[in-house]
Image 1: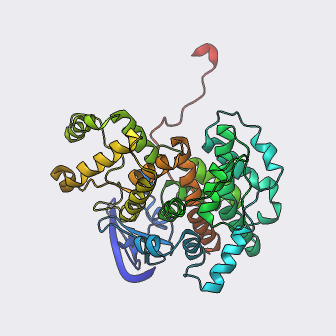
Image 2: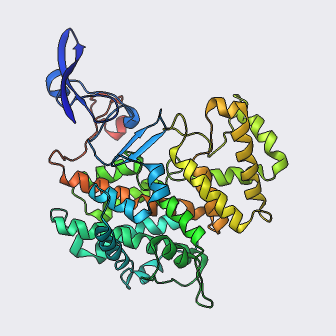
Length: 431
């Protein structure tokens, strides 16, 4: 952030106030209103904080108009095609791409922290069998602070580092255990000879009675899903992690808060909503009916998985994931899965229909990730947990950045109060 000497002039009740402005390395200038209340006695009003920068950050930049997503300056499509998830984790956490030695050390540290405390097995058994996996994960991640006391002191840089590695390493194990618990199968321990994505797939789908070998195409697709969801700037769950962190809460509590926020259907449930829409369509012969409904402004029906709130052109993550979706469907086949056949036909229509092209309603990352996870055999209840697993490193990176920021202070949004003004209490017999 640089001071470009520009100012914004604000007139309030005949008085003029000069507000400093700052220029980022990318994106629009910002007006500094930190002293506005002290000087002018007024607040700004911005529901949803959609026009407010709550922090400065060097981690992720999004330009929705250009369809651009950068992690530490690197385009997401390059990272997804040429890199892999743990290397992207290193980039987000430490700011630069690692050397071969640094990457090997980082991968070893993560791999050797994938097991969870054995007593946590009993903690899982306290949940009902029909509990939603996100309910389990929210509780278990928060409970990590009860099992790992030696990495909860946020003032200790080394403890922050240990907590970061533990969260990245153990989240796949926790998510896989939540899945196994809800389907009534025994937990599967992680293996140190497998890569991050393969380890997760094996913990989800292997059973004691037979050997399970992870297909490299499926592992690559899963790794790309992790990579493409690793961070997305100051979204609702990331802002929740930062707000919780501003109080000085321990890292496990902060990440649990992020998981809870992600659970909301308006945030982390988009790919699940996409699959539910495909089920509503049901068969390929009904696609024209739903396409017509999507074009009808008077019809509340919306095609989920097309277009994006942030990306006004194309979703830069979708192109890469489309490739993986095609590979997965070719490997597993779609002939016996009407749902996936509907998805492929709907994709074809959306990419060729002039209405969708003009409105830039292209398939987004949620459309393709939903198709991949469905083809792999995950129930829709696991879609958001896998999103949480992927986003954990982004939350941690933002948390670490905030803790180290000398400007860090507890979050305290203001309000526009529209309730009753001062009135006296009336005794009950007089009401």
